Length: 90
Image (cartoon, rainbow, N blue to C red; front, top):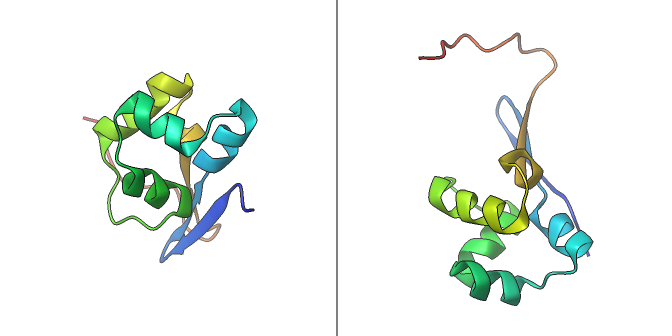
């Protein structure tokens, strides 16, 4: 069983680590679903990395319940050849 899923995108890759957290904390996906009132399909998409967008309300519920940071659940790594991002914090 995979615990961390890598999903490659054009400029880097994502690591989806929810399954690893659940295994480490010995929490079933069904318990997480019930306790956080999150749809099973949504949780499976986060586990498998099969998503189009990340819902900040769902991730906030999961982080609160699991007592973790969002980067413990999903993390983005740019390609090595990419320079630092050209964006401004507003």
